[in-house]
Amino acid sequence: MPNFNLGESIPPHTEHAVSVSLPTWRANVGYEEGEDWVIGNMTTGYPRFFIHRSIQAFAKEILEKNGRKGSVAFLFPTRQVAARCVSFVKLHAPPAIVSALEVVHLVLDTANPQSKALRGLCPAISAVISSPEGFSFLKQYWQHTGDGVSSRRAEFCHSLFKDGLLRVDETPKDPATSMSPKPCRGPKRYQRGGSLDAGKPSTPSPAPALAPDREETSRFLEERFGRNLDVSFVEPAKSAIKRRIAGALTSDRELTASPVPESEMESNTRGIVNLREEDIYLFPAGMNAIFNAHRALLGARGSLKSVNFGFPYVDTLKILEKFGPGCVFYGNASEADLDDLETRLKAGERFLGLFCEFPGNPLLTCPNLARIRKLADTYDFAVVVDETIGTFANINVLPFADIVVSSLTKIFSGDCNVMGGSAIFNPNSRYYSALKDFARTGYEDTYWPEDVMFMERNSRDFASRIERINANAEAICDVFRENKLIKTVFYPRDTESSANYEACKVPGGGYGGLISVVFHHKEQAVAFYDAVDTAKGPSLGTNFTLTSPYVLLAHYQELEWAAQFGVDPDLIRISVGLEDTEDIVKVFKSALHVAEHGSQ
Image (cartoon, rainbow, N blue to C red):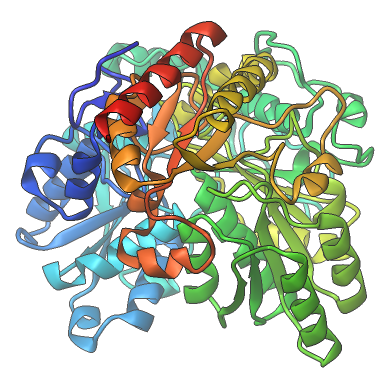
């Protein structure tokens, strides 16, 4: 098994890795306490929590070039995103911080002859600049929404900035009144009827002289920046990702520049025959998919409170609390919680939507989606289900949901080197037309082309990887269940809500690759974690086994609050990988042996 040093990227020597090695229990605590012996050794971190070095370097140069040295800057992909960040800070920060805000927009310098080869990529950056006192407010927006630039976008645009190909756009100054340029949507043959442009009057095509030549762009990128990126395949890659998410593309075939017949979507594994590629939206991060699902519902249905049903990933609850009129939180996802919700509904309370995970993180409980769907139909609220942990290779939740979201960063990618997210609008939802209307103006495709290409390549063998991970997880789960040190094992197969999981499990599906365990004593948990010979750090769904004291990392400032819902502060979460089953079982047996004898 690999040996990772403190602060090393996971995977090692991976410039855009999305995890970082925290190999001891003490290192995790040190990270949360901001201790320099940990923070100072970190080469990277999970991207929404740790600002990538390439983003930091670009932000620093923007500040220096604009005479704001000593200030802080957060980088976003478009004007509209920057405007949302400014609006958030204005709502939550003191007036002194708000008054010091400034936004700098960097756009392609079309006067430069070399810019012609880059227009198809739409490289742009909007920097929100603040005094140092505003850092925490900007960081909240960055973390909660997933709206920040990706490290690959920042790295690429920084190169353009250094070479004078990106310039400051002097007008307009106020981000609240600015509009983003029309997003690049790729070749027309990938813009099918019924997409975001449906119902709009046609506009004349731009003059041929202005249309970027994709071959020229690809050659320019390789010669100038050392990037082997064939931009003619970006739109086909997005199409392949969407079809893979729909369960309509299961092969690992190579991309083609020719569009795939729409009829292929009809045989998707989601059980929705009228599901179309245009109903699937891609985002630069999983949390950004959740954030935008909430935005879409607010835009489609108006300002109503939401329901967060079940103990959630930390930023889901923050989005529902901070972006809109708030939410009602049910932390147990139990039938009793549903009884209480039904009582509220019968008394006349109305909600925007119910957000839940299936299964939940980290307790792997599953809400009763059939009952939730009946309540939603009766009392007019939307259902948004996060299927990240279960994955659509194991479960099918779309028939119960109006929107299904997922973090593609996790098991869909597997390689732990690219971020991504998705949202599916169920075409049979009563809100479908309103959601599509909102998306026509409210959705921006900010998924950077390089990230798209990595995601498509990584996900080609998604289906076959799931089978192996399912088998490994069941074997490891059995090891924990048989060990006397373990107080509780959380796994979808064995929880009290397992019947809810079975109701959504697809034929041949398994129970996923996530397991959480609680030891009888904290010292046993610490000894086990320090001894287990796997990668150890944040994230999940990696092709290699990844272990984490999850509650410490996700809820360090609110451990007592989390404990109210059965979330033990010393819980250890294991994301199971593709290792040989016999070998990985030995790894966990060995760590349990150390925990048993080291804690006596």
